[in-house]
Image (cartoon, rainbow, N blue to C red; front, side, top):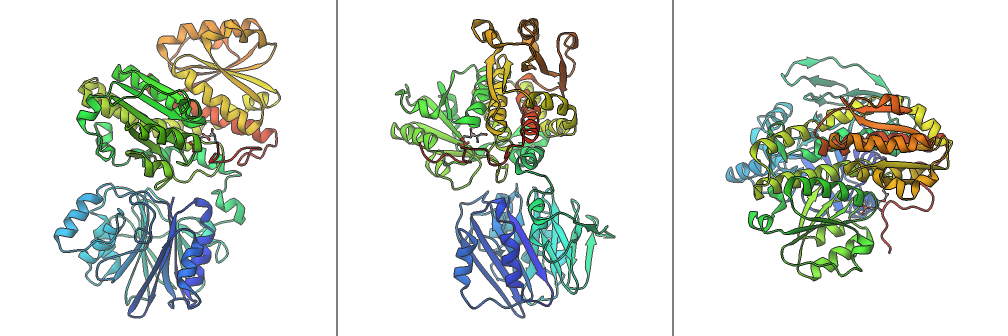
Amino acid sequence: MCGIVGYIGSQDAYSILIEGLKKLEYRGYDSAGVALVNGSRLEVIKAKGELEQLENKVGAKFPNGSTGIGHTRWATHGAPSDVNAHPHCCCSGDFAVVHNGIIENYRFIREWMEEAGHKFQSETDTEVLAHLIKHFYNGDLLGSVQQALAQVEGSFALVAVARGKNDQMVCARKDSPLIIGLGKNENFVASDVPAILQYTRRIYILEDGEAARVTKDVVEVFSPEGKGVSKEVFHIDWDAVQAEKGGHPHFMIKEIMEQPHALRETMRGRLLEEGRKIDLSELNLTDEEIASTRRVFIVACGTSYHAGLVGKYAMERALRLPVEVDLASEFRYRDPLLDESSLVIVISQSGETADTLAALRLVRGKGVRVLAITNVVGSSVAREADKVLYTWAGPEIAVASTKAYITQLLALYLITLHMGRVRGAMDASALEEGGRAIFRLPEKVENVLGRERELKRFSAYLSRWENAFFIGRNMDFAVALEGALKLKEISYIHAEAYASGELKHGTLALIVEGIPVVALVTQKALQDKSLSNIKEVKARGGYVFCLAQEGMQGLEEELDEVFYLPATLDFLLPVISVVPLQLISYQAAVERGCPVDKPRNLAKSVTVE
Ligand code: AGP
């Protein structure tokens, strides 16, 4: 996620902006910039790379001005570069804006503005805001910003300043956080608390649709209808470390809690009309290419590989198309049978995993199409693939991947529906049913997140064991693998996942009195089969914690604990069923005093073989 800082007061703004942006570095970024209003001048300086590059560009002579805005960019539209860095200006240089979010209809607005004579500099979606503000400007900066935003579809947290208007900043938000820090003869705007904590602990939290005019002495907040709003002052009592995690004790739990937002951002502009329509035109895969595909290969590592397994079940069920899923470290040495009718999908949160990158290069070397699903714009995987579908989960700091996984599943589902429509494998009602169910996934994940306390009893039980099993059939087996990895990598409990039907072929020998077994029973068609496997475990004394779908009957008497998940289409359940597994792993690791965000021996991105 991008970082935003704004300052207006009596001090030099530049140093305050830079210090504030440094406090937001933990959010991850690829470029940065500042804009200072100094009388009739509006000075904009920006640079690709770390804040140090920006400071080097500024040099010893800091730009003057006591009104300014700053930004650290996490690229979404447009690769990391000086020109794509924020702040963005209109062609006259009269206005500068910084933005966090995604403007869904930026292509339409850009065409409109270009037809109106505006000249664009960057590839970003954000730049349209600066030209829109110029287009509507009538002397009132707040009114012009509100008129500009009325044209925008998408998410935004933005701050705008104007040449010659030292006395004010204007800010607004929708679906992307923004706070106003209240100082003495100075005020601040920021995307997150850490940026301003050293100056003030008193803040306004802007609500969706609200806009504000901020001067050094007065903050006026307005509703979407333009009415004045009196805001409650919140006092932040976090220390700086807590503030980076949004008040959570660890990045992992913060990122688990961000999953509904990550899903909404990733479907934004792609799943339209509440799921009735899908637009994946950004894939640049022609209908002919999709129709001529005879086999799909999904290649990844770790959690991304587990996402690929779910994708296999979904795609084969919906498209009746063969899908092979490979660990990248295996794929690259098995001389895979690829030809022009193959479509290879590589999945990588970081976009820098060495094995995945090597597999991608092997496929490209054979002249076969590669589609990348990645969370990092401008990453090696993104740059070297033919096509890219980005997840918009925002920076994932914890080593254990959570929100990236869930958005990878979403990306795979969107690709499945898109291919289903093009290949005629899914009729209109199946497509609409699937799209609408996907649209509602964030609220179902919110439901599970709100029930995290219900999991604590089992997590505490689990934390006292050195071994555990995860079992499931079909898609549940794919999610069981992810659950076992989460538990292993952060709690150091030796967890193994097995296809439920495989237990009797050896593993049952390890089921002893009380051993914790997580059983996933979410696929309605396999409920009875799964239940009989659970009975095998119970008969040998296992302690079974079951994840089932709301509405399933006859489970309680067989099991030690059942956690019912909100119902949805079976093939979408993995997005929901993985959440309790993430939470019990997190809770067990905390119970065992493990360094949750940075587990021993592991790196966030494995850039070596
Ligand atoms: C997942 O929790 C682990 N951190 C690890 O398995 C990770 O998924 C794997 O290294 C792949 O990383 P990537 O998605 O960045 O390629």
